[in-house]
Image (cartoon, rainbow, N blue to C red; front, side):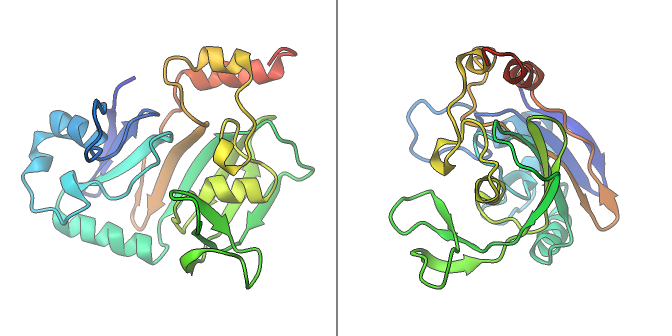
Length: 239
């Protein structure tokens, strides 16, 4: 699986990121694979010529976890990038994700509105604010996620806030920990599911489907080809 251009609109370029790929090159990583930025500069070399601010090289407007696949929004020029960043900060952009879980709940829709902070002891982990004395590091970040059932094992998550690990943590909070997401209580992949994911070996199944902002709407990013087979294995008695 390789990155590709999904389309363009309103001064934006929309890319498809495969699971397991970093958005930006990993610093100091020995033998690290190619990044989405490197792929972008091959697909659209002109993206390397503008004076982008640090952390937004190539015009890439946001990040995805390495294990998350799907849509990445890229600005065509610095002014458009500034506008997207302002809209993200003002929560004017709605982001839609899809994920797979083997957990079951009694409801079809639910809103999680729980603040998120950095774990005090475990680097790279986030924690929900369970109470006034919940151990954490730094400040709390307000976050809200709308969950909607889309299939027996698949769910849609819509967010306007963009806190680190928000969908993963809120899903675990409401009883829908992502399949494979061990840091947040997800069950390991059953052997049958793991077998059909061998092409990408993602740590969990989370996919960024689409974004919509003031005056624009992204194309829908299809999930990786292995997703349908993986979900089908969950329906089988052997998993």
